[in-house]
Image (cartoon, rainbow, N blue to C red):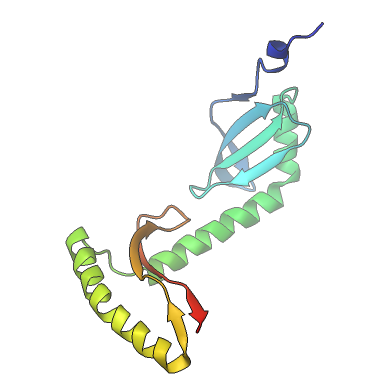
Length: 154
């Protein structure tokens, strides 16, 4: 009879990175084996590839899957390269922490006046105005300031 611990013994096995050539591109691949029946391939922001496979998958199976999905992987690598290039082309100049705080202070003085003016013009109420220092979802080291407020009809 199987016990609970027998079923929970191995959740996943992460294999060391290996290098492979995909469509002429040298790619770093991480293999994660787990109790799954499907395969998932992920192209990461650093242009490496993570492949999640069933525990029983062999190195030959993994190489075959990577070969079959070569076009998909290359397409996503190129998409990420393009996004990074566009970001670098249009990225604003990096600000120091001091400059960011000065701009935030100016914004906290100016924005509430403008919001109050326009809220009165269009007949709505609004809640608090806050400014937050947040990083982008792409994990790029750029600070973005967001103004969050809720507008509702009077």
